[in-house]
Amino acid sequence: MKKIIITIIFICTFLITSVWSIVKTDNIPEINLKVNVSSLTDEDYSYVGTTGIDNPTKDDFKNIKFTLDIKNLGRVVNRKITVPTMKRVLDSYELNRYWFGSLSSQDNLSENFAMYNEELVLYSRNLDEQAIRNIFSTAEVKVSWTTKEGSFEERMFNLGDIILFHE
Image (cartoon, rainbow, N blue to C red; front, top):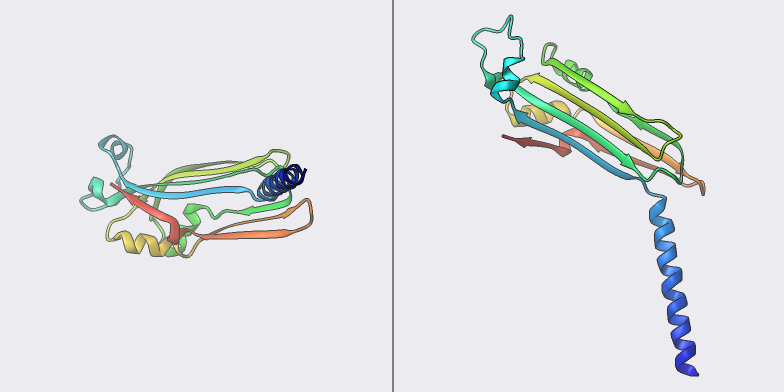
């Protein structure tokens, strides 16, 4: 009888702990943020207009891809996502560094996710990796929310800290 009671207590404790873990995790959005910098391919470079640049080369430009995916927003209320545009980040450093690009986002409050994407070409002549990192270190992504239970949460990400360089 004692073994049965101990087994029941153990099973109940395990179940309560498991359910609490799922509920607690369910309150936290899954945030995936990437800023990738890579060299242009020959095909990429063929689309780059180089008017006004003395002796342009493919190495004078970089591709930058920004992605922010947020999932698990079902138990979140009053969410706020602040994302800087890459053009504004680059223009704050020096005009004419943002060459061209596109951006898209989907952030409907009625949905359980949000996504922001931006792809651009950076005029990077005379900028090494550290200089590019320094430019992006002036920008932050801020994600804040309130859980249905009333707890306020906030996450801030410095783009200079997460930027990755690829060849």
